Image 1: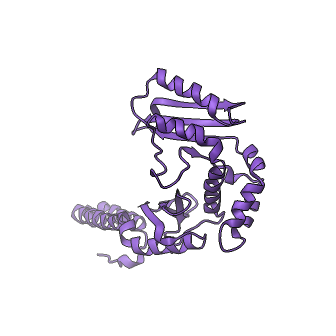
Image 2 (image 1 turned 120 degrees about the vertical axis):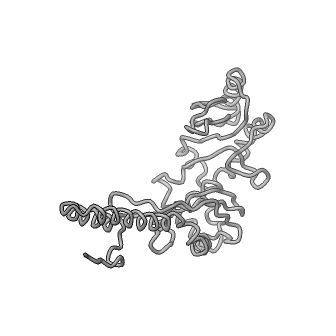
Image 3 (image 1 turned 90 degrees about the horizontal axis):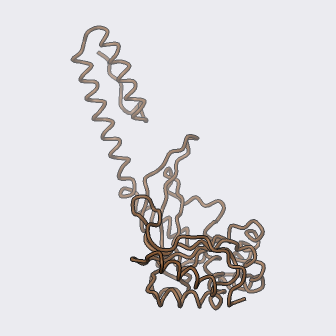
Length: 281
């Protein structure tokens, strides 16, 4: 008979394999009863360890929430206005690295939703590229162009289309999303402007001084809205109207209802628009 302390086996998969290996040796000796016992014990141990991993978010929620609050405060955000929507289970990559995700909403100014990446070993947030600065910048940049986008916002409001990414009334900007903050031509500049001073005035000034340059780099803007029962005829009407009121740029329009299973738009207007000249230009 053999005895192996469970503490030696930090990885339950290794322990499971060990049990199977010993079991095969015993099987050769026709000791089937012991083999069955080993399999049952291994299954119980594996199940317990799997269950312990499964409640990662519940076990660590308080610490993760505190770390998220500390993290956003470093970027001039009010930690009391951060809402944690969801904490994922850790994911292990082939390299052996692990990470988990935290979906947050910031209900201060500017409102935005964002996904943070965390280290499951110390529960700290991992953002070496400080993408959150770009997200804040993008919301302020879109707001700076509000008057250009206002005809489209008003039109979509009249149609009863809702912005699924921003709650009603918290931001005057609706529907428009951009990722221009990732552009290598301005990324370092906007980070420097963001980190200058104790508030965002330098960043706002940077946007104001470089609005044309940023707009030229912003070659793919998303327009996202939800509304049921948009048939093909109405979708075509919306498309034609947008072509006349949008500022010059490329747009990925996603207005309607998506299939919950596939995420693909099943009704409405899902199209790419290239606007060469609009009323605002």
